[in-house]
Each structure stands twice: as structure tokens, then as C-alpha cells.
Image (cartoon, rainbow, N blue to C red):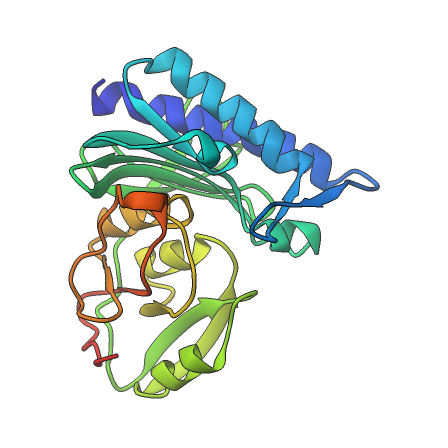
Length: 265
């Protein structure tokens, strides 16, 4: 598998999954079930998972695949694997708030190196090109041809006036206490992996996450942010956030533009 072969496939599958998600999102009603960890799942999660996993297995049969909806069947990941959250931000979807995404990423040696984040209700598409540079695509999102691309880059952050982005559905006191260590100009809330993308485009400077996430929640956004010059580190010691961990659970983390002077936990 080459990057040149990978990128068109994951972009197309993200768009196909997005179409199915929006079909269900715009329907009069949809069932919401609860998984064993008390997180919601809908027909949109399940349908998007089938589209993406079938497409990836057909295109790259020799590459390990990890998806949220099939996580119970996964054991070890190996050094290189594809990781998918077919509908990140299910709570945003259920409440019809629009901030949900399709996430597909490639992890190599514990690092997300390529990825796509598509927010179908917002009409925003971010992905890494084969050379590793992250871009935002605008236009009609034709599945067979790429539209207009704009290279994206993190802001040259002003530590006296930072723009902070935080979770819309998982904001808590611990997060606020950490944010209060910084000089903040403005704060915005966003759902799903869009928070990584807002830093990647320079629309925000820092996203601290003091709460539970899984690798499929973050890998694609992490890849997009890295390709725009940003970084993601552990909250406790500021070492790089790694992937392929047992159980796929992440520690607390901070995503940021490198000009931000990180405060200790």
C-alpha cells in the first residue's frame, strides 16, 4: 500500500459514508441504542462502518483494520493499521447539532501518518495528501475527482490571546481549571474530531482533553493536525500521544499549535 493509493480511497469512502449518514440524519426518526459502555449507537454508525470497512478490506486486504463498531473483535494491531470511527460525535448526531465527522486514518509505528476527517453536515473536508501536507477541500465533493484544495497550517499563536476549543458534549470542571492557566482571548465549543481540524486551520490554538477518548476518536484528526504543523501530546508529561495501545484507550491529551507555551498538568 502506497500513500498515493491510500488517499483517494479513504477520501472516497469518507464521502460515501457521509452520504449514508446524512440520509439517516435527515430522516424523520432513527433508533438510538446503547452499547455496553453506555455510549449511543445509531443505524448511521452501523451503516457507515459497513461502507468503510468493506471498502478498506477490498482495497487493502493485507492491512490490519480497527473500527469502533467492531472493536470487540480486535486483539492486537501490529505496527501498521487502519483505524476508523465511522461516525464520531454520535451525541451530536442524535441531538441534530451537526458537529459529527467520519474519521479514517493510517497508523504507522504508533503514529497517525495519514488521515481524512469529513464533517458532512458542516460541508467541511480535511485530509492529508500523499506527501503528508494537510489540506481542506471545498466544492461539491465529487467522489471521483478532488475539488479545490487549500493547504492548511496552524496559527503562529499569541500566548497573550489564545483561542481555545473544547468539547461540546464532554466539558467539565477539570478542563476549565486547566484552560484557566492560559491567557484566553476566546473560547469555542466543537464536537468530534473537528476540534483538531480547527487548530490545523489556525481557527484555534489549543484543545485540552481531560476525559476518556479512544484511538479511533483521535487518529484522523491527529494526522490532519500533524500535517498542518501541529502536535498532540499526553496531558501528564507532554510526551507524544502514541497509538496501538492495549484496549485502544487514550490517556488525557493536549492538541495544540507549537507556538503555544504549554502549561503543566
